[in-house]
Image (tube, rainbow, N blue to C red):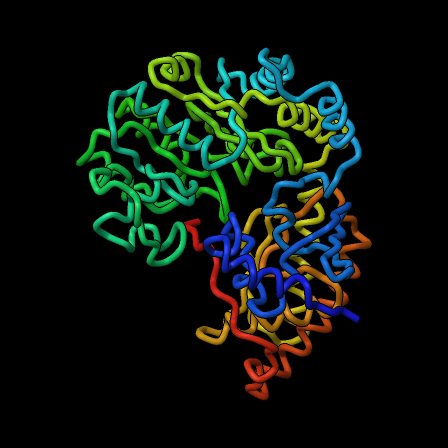
Length: 438
């Protein structure tokens, strides 16, 4: 029997002393189950998460926001991290692991010659954009998709708060972002090359920033055309592989799509839950970093590189991406079958390791989604509209998850027919999360 007291209570307290309640929007309780989400963990191992009330949940949701691709507390990665902690993770001198990691990344990317490191995705994207602007001597950036919270990106909403509606959160206010940045970041839609043509027709751009793939595959040689536009306009092509990287293959999904960027940015899955990010790029462009000031004390600590080296080695040894794709495909197939069996309308999207579904009931969809999370939580699952697959998710785990999901889908089907979804909710309807242009 699931009992939730300490987690929701601590979340209410957190909102009084931490703006928003936490430091990552994607973990806000209001996105999942506003009045009943466990919110805090005391232990995580494999696919299991222990909360403050002693409940144990199996995680079939966003799995550490996609950061733990091997599973929580992977023993091989933890061993490497513990070793460097014992030896000392920081000193006046640099850690040799960053050279080893740089060589590993460059071997995977023969088009690149240099690497800079950071510790999280948003700052790594800011570094990449800074380098591109320093290299080209230009200010304007054309972008597609979500790329973090920094000023260069959020400035797209200055003067028009709808610019990021399809990429981020509808109506996101650029409060605190200097108004002089207005017009320096301009969005375009994935697979709509004419929008990018329109941008470069009226602007001299420093960079084209985009995820090479997110929810759908590129159509009509879209990425090749983007590459051509970048070359024709002497702009730097930056692929944001923070989420897509190290899932479909060891490295970036762009290697499968056959289009090389000028800079590729990684974080999340490359270090299995320990802070690490990398900006990999062509030597001539990357050297422009020396003309700017890009520097931080904790970019030189030892834990991140050690974790990344151990993670990448294990991913190669165990052929982890194949497992992620296999499990992701199975989940998507079973979602479809269960929905059909229960007479539910759902939409399935995403690459297999980042599988997603949504209920297709118009204005009622979000209430149904909240009810789904509520009922799956009762069954011992952290469940949402997305499953970020890890190496720790095995077929037997998927079978048990789908068994519970099928039961919950049955409840939803009855509730929809009886128009009783909102009556069955124990709290308020969850807020909608990130919305991206695919």
